Length: 250
Image 1 (cartoon, helix red, strand yellow):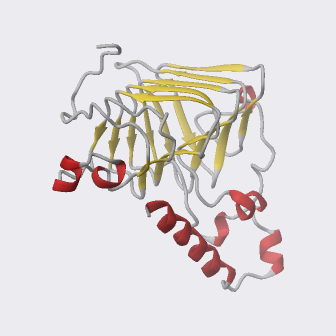
Image 2: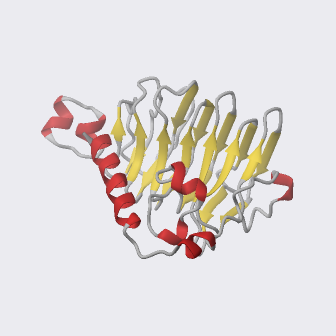
């Protein structure tokens, strides 16, 4: 039901924007500066305005204390190779939008993504304005999570997803593995998680928005318990204390 509502909303927004009084010349003037991805070495991580591509066979490491600021519409880090984000409890990696930015870290089949001790905010996007559209957006970019799982092996630990439009999305029947553990989902606007894959592991997480209804207690499913999520993923061993300490394997 939630997925149907989501797709209906997206279709409606597309229809509304199609009626907007935008001239052909205005469409030609839309900013497509990030249509061609650059290498991470060529990017300024404190002011990201173009797509970044980590290609197959390439490994890129972001160290503790780094700051990633996204400052343009619909900017992506596309992971085809391997991306490691290695924050620490004392010195987390901060990933956020600034000004008009919106962003997504997108994985591809065969890739590897590991995130430890990060704070992710302002990520994900849905249609919001014609100005934000590019040729890519018009084709397929209407809905994305701050983390967009398109396949590969993903491990995310001790990370806070806060005030994102959409925190996490997995494609149906993705090829790979997914473990998101010891994380916090706080204040996300539209979606905490959208994941219809039963193999996806979201155990030992804190969910700010949780429904302690009779339906949830009697039948603890995503639909009954997580109002800002949709799907069929494993969210067992929920943490109720926002200040919990996650100990892997405990």
